[in-house]
Amino acid sequence: MATIEDMRASLAALQEAKRGERERRIDRLVRSAQRRGEDDDRIYWSIVHDLEGAPATTNRRQLEEIGFEFVAPDEVKVMTETAVRSCLGLLVEALALIEVFLCRTDHLDDRRLLLLILNRIVEEPVPDLPLLPGVRDWIDCSDEPSSTSPEAGELHGTAIDPSVRSFGRDATLPRP
Image (tube, rainbow, N blue to C red; front, side, top):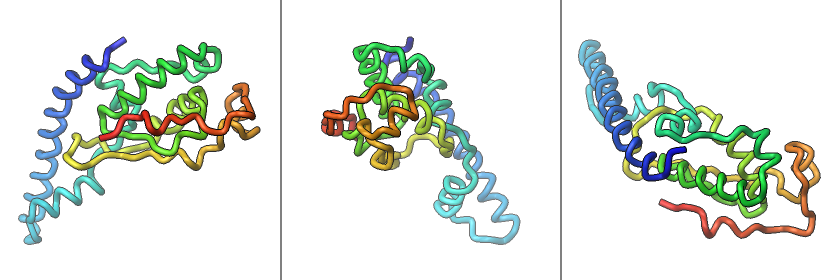
């Protein structure tokens, strides 16, 4: 399994290639606008590209590109608490490398949060853009049923300790 340092090195090389490809696609948009006699402002066409023309990917694919190896959701259900915590920690750090940050997770235990990330968060479509200064994704987990709600256990087949209300994780999550 790749370490965070390995992933950081892979990310640097990959980002250079993505920056070059983005620039080439924006150049094509500018040239097309010029041929049509339209405004050829590069900043405008950069925004158009990023919002409308960037290819789609997922955070799963982005992490796999830099060497992250995902655990299967079915495996999470039988992992020890220590293994879950370790796996979650590495995944949260890897997400931070690609400027994806989690917030409002305190109502979820580690297993529930890991399953949420694996089953939903890393599968949602995102634009395949190079990392840009000041651009990051914040994933608000507050709409996910708490780890103490009955439906949380039913959804993922995990045991729930109803006496636990907050897991106090948000203060320790990576931040930009």
